[in-house]
Structure formats: structure tokens, C-alpha cells
Image 1: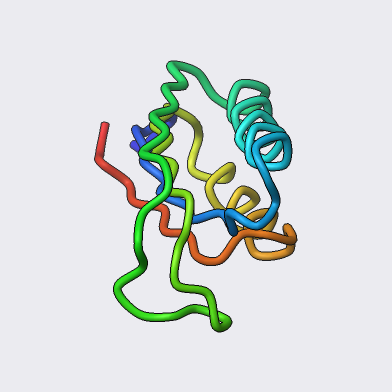
Image 2 (image 1 turned 135 degrees about the vertical axis):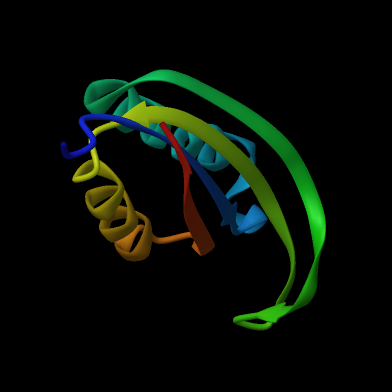
Length: 98
């Protein structure tokens, strides 16, 4: 039997040069996207931290952890949107299981 839903976690790093309003808008955008396509959405903002190595000549990033439950097709779409969104330095989506 195929999995109908699974638990996922995504960590993404936003460029802090966007300012407070830009950071809040980006976090809200991905929260809304997850709420529309999944359930049990939890967002934990880790805040601004120093990167382990420079990304695009930037040394700091704003870290966000988001957990949600959805069907297996949504994380592929979320990954695509994260890759094309300006201001996202890196992202990683992990399936935690059922």
C-alpha cells in the first residue's frame, strides 16, 4: 500500500539583506503554501546566524525550520518554489516518515 501522507521538515536560509518586512513576507509565503497543501504546519524561526561558509559572498543568513504533513507530491513542488524564489540561499527537505 502506498503512503498517503508523511511528515516532512524543511530548513531554509533567507538572505537577511531583505530587511524585516522581506523576511516576514517570505516566511508567511511558505507557511501559506504549506497550509494550502498540507496540515499540522509548524514554523520555528531560528533567526539570523553566521553561515559555516560564504554563500554568494554572504556570511549571514536567517534560518527557518518548518514541519508539516502532506502527500508525497507537495515537497517536490515546495523544492521547486524554494529554488526559484529570490532571497533563498539554501534549503533542505527531509521526510521524517509516517
